[in-house]
Length: 605
Image (tube, rainbow, N blue to C red):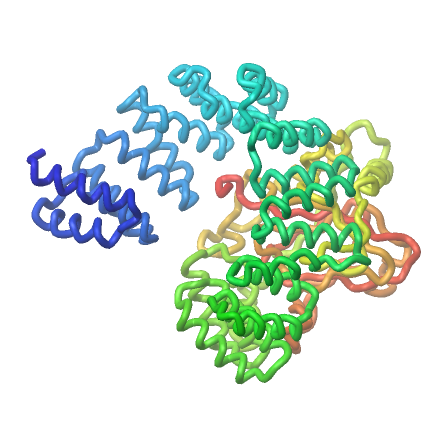
């Protein structure tokens, strides 16, 4: 490489390291014109494009660099990093493998290969890669932590724990080791031990908002809600400006002590940090969950008075005005917001929701199409786009909302050792009932008149729940096998032999309890599994039934449910996550208990 190219590349690299993409490209673009197909120039152009968010361009530059010089370990690894971000896991693994084949001592290559293989569920190969990594970096904490993470994902919880405990024993005063152990124990539902490890991490200098969030959760799961609240207090005293911590504290207080003002700490802190956008945003989000839109507008007036303005606040103003004010005024605010934030997806989706309410489904559909162009699996955008098609009389509404074929029911088989399905689900109901310990529904969820369990349900070391998870997984796989092969469809096109849970929880509804009509933004396939039911939930009426196709009431649309299913104990209803669904209220002295979950194709995790 001649000296001038080398000097220019060093200059561009320095600019990229400082985040100055424009300056880096001002060097690289003319350099690429003078020296076309130079692999190092193309590599840095790829890194620059990635840094500024031009992912398609970055991918093309990486490919061009490797075409010009195939044996570049660093380029293979950086390209693989990009592919992981695009959920192209199998391609990423191929490039990580090429990187370590070219450079067998490439530590970061082995590290990322091991973790990505685990992400793909290829645990045997992941463990081999992590063994190689540890042989290259004996005793290094980062390598040990990666190996422990892989062992845990592979089901070897004891092996994972042993690795981290050995690390703690070797360096007992390193706070981060205790923190990693605490996270591992928390994931294994060893809540008492996890809390002790978090406290040790604090003792040895690790103090982050995330630590206090996790510690509060494990105290709650260990049936110590007062200690959980005290932990939130400790965290807020240390990090009074952390919006995530404030939000979690407010949500927790709402559920365990609904008689208290859950927003008290947040309202007291905002005047002391009036320019903290996160605090304002959390406050308005929490008010929105309660439908307190007038209070949002009052709060916005105060924020604007002290000179705080940002797209996030404009979005809150637009959404609140859409509910409480004139539709024309709301539209004007949304128009201004799109000028301020022309690429943001949340403003487009919120504007689409407003347009559906105010009678302009054509424009709502166009905004949803823009969001889907950015993320084809955006469940919220598909929900609103399908609704717009319904209002427009567009035949594509039946393509996206095929209620007869997409909504399916399947019996969840009881495991061996139970004399009947009734016996199994009665035991499941008993175990779940012990986990329903809050006093009110989560403030940001759709259920009304009931409670919801905390955290990922199937992390619990409960043999009955472990059996339930396996029975559910088998039921899903049986159902998905019968899906049609339609690759370009947002639902059918994600058909997968293996699925991964994105979340799982239990809901216990009391008399007059129900779910508002909603969709699930994080899943592909969503569910309702009926665990125990009141005798009043029968075929005589639709009380307590699940219904599909009716949008949330706040949209005010003349669209009614297109399909209703009567719950039965052991029956699992499966449906697209983007499909509107809700529960009809019921009256009974007996609760209605379900388990719900979202899954995605395992290849996307």
